Amino acid sequence: MAKKCGFLLGAIIGAATAGVTALLYAPKSGKELREELNQQTTDAKSSAKEYADIAKEKGKEVKTVAKDASDEIKISLKESASQIKEQLTRASKDVGEELNSLKKSTTDIAQELKEIAAETAEDINVTAKDTLEEVKSTTKESKEDIESSTMDFDNDQEKVEEDFDYSTTNINSEQTEEDGKKD
View 1 (spheres, rainbow, N blue to C red):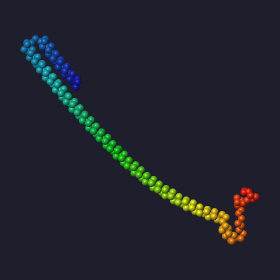
View 2 (cartoon, rainbow, N blue to C red):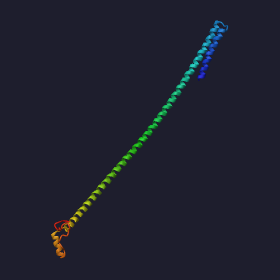
View 3 (cartoon, rainbow, N blue to C red):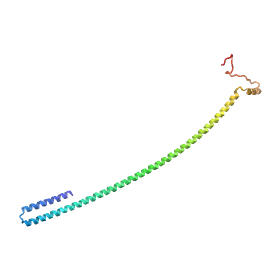
View 4 (cartoon, rainbow, N blue to C red):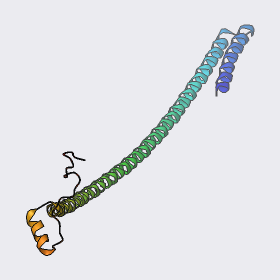
């Protein structure tokens, strides 16, 4: 297009120069010269008007192309923004679902831990009761053994009556005295 405009402009300038030169060197009368000059001026004006119309048309085309391109870019950007929004919405929804799943898992684990803690506390309670019963039983048996093995006069009397060979003499080395000394 620039070549075409440059060519047309050169042609107009060339034609005007050629016309002026021809008029100056051609032997014509003043009336003929004026008519020819008017004709060339009219031709130059119409040629300039055609170039102006072409320039206006090309400007409109460029404007239309630019508008179409900007509209396409706007549509493309809107579609991209819409796609990104959808992706973010889906990602947000997925994160929300995962969070709810984690909350449920945490709640389930907490419930299991509560149950385990309750069972453990119950087991400890049972074990403590069993141990207490064993200690009481062992203490009672030990007390009975201690009472029976001590030198109880009644017990000795019963044994003497049962067995005449039973000796009530204390034979424990800690309680005997030999020459007034303890072992």
